[in-house]
Length: 71
Image (tube, rainbow, N blue to C red; front, side, top):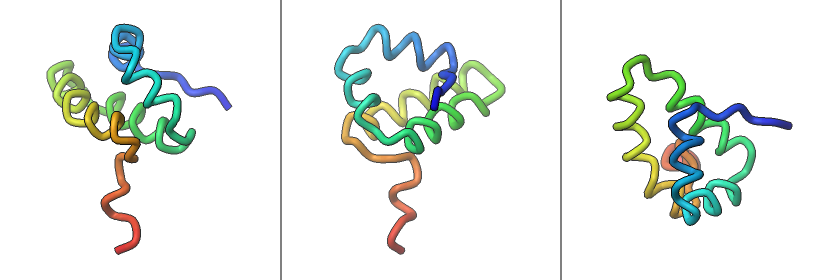
């Protein structure tokens, strides 16, 4: 399986080694959720905002929708 990352996410992962390591530890499904979440935003400002919000979640090893699981 290969995942095409949005340019913004790819750039940040290249610059931040800790974030890249944490992102690579996530399952393919979680990586895809994050990539899609950023890629679906139309405006660049929205993409940047979403990236800032998900960075701590990636570092914690959480998926984008983990808070909705086991409800």
